[in-house]
Image 1 (tube, rainbow, N blue to C red):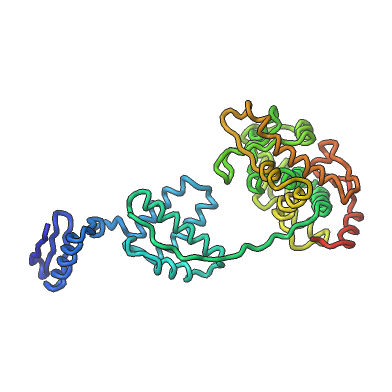
Image 2: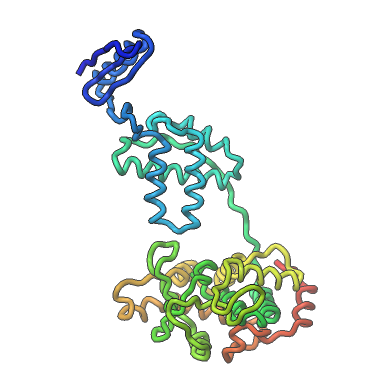
Length: 383
C-alpha cells in the first residue's frame, strides 16, 4: 500500500489504501503527507484511526464515551466531579489525537486550573482512570507518565466525649420540635462509626433488620454490603417507634413544618445544620459533624481498645449467607459500639444517665440541662 496523488478540483488528493483520502491545495503538501504515511507504514506505526473522518481518537470523542460509561458505575456526586475534570480536559484538548497527549500536556492542564493541590490531585486521579480505561479497551497500548502532586490533608478538630454528649444533648433540646430523629441520627453517627453521614441520611426503613437487630447498607463507598449490628438499647428504642414501608427514608419529617412536608426525607445538610447550631449555642468553634462524631469517638476508643480491634469493629461486610454468619461476624463491631456507648455514658468518670427509653434515646435533653451545659463549656476548652 504505497498510495497515490491525483489532481482534483484545482488541488491534489492523496489516496492511501481504501480508507485514507485527503485533499491539499498544492502538490508539495500532498507529497509531504504521502511521504509521512509511507514512513509510518515502514516503521509499523501506521494506525488507520489517526486518519478516519470521524476522528475516533479525538479526546472529545473518547471523553464522551467514557463519561457515558462512568455515569452508570458511580454515584451522582462522584460523577459530577469526574464530569467536571474531564470536561476541562476536553475544553483544553478538543479534537487532539489522544496519542499526542503526554506528560507535558497533562502537567500544563493540571497547573492551569485554579485548584487547591488536593483538588488538582483529584483531577489527576480522574485523568489517570480515564487513560487506564483506554488501555483496558485497547484504544491505547500504554499509559503516559503523570506528574506527581503533593498535598497535605487538613486536620479535623476532635473533642472529648463529654463535650460530644453535651452537643448531642443540645441538638435534642433545640430540634425536638422539628423531629426527635435529628438528635437520634447524630447520636448514631457518634456510636456506629462505620456509618458515614450520607449513608445515615439515606437509610431506608427496609435496611433496618429488626429480626437480626442490624442496619444493612447495600452499596456503601467500599463497594460491598455493610452490616452494622445495633446495641440492645437502640433495638428496644426502635420497637417503640412506628415503622414505615420498606422504601421510606427512616430519617424523614413526621409533620409538615418549615417548608418540609410530612414524609419528606431529611436534606443532606440536616444533621450538619443542627450540629452547627448546637455548637454555636455552647460556644464551641471549629468542630465539624464528622470530626465531632466519628473521629472523636474513634480517638476515645483508642484509650480502651487496640487499633486492630477498632479496625475490625468499625468496618463490617456480609455475604449471601448473612443470616447464618451474622452472629459471629458482628461480635467485634458490636463490642466496639458497646464501648463507644459506654464511654458516651461517662463524663470523666462521673456517671452519665444511661439511655433507658425511647424518649431519652431520641436525644430529648439527654440528662443535662442548658445551664449546666453552658457552664461546662465556659470552664473548659472546646477541643
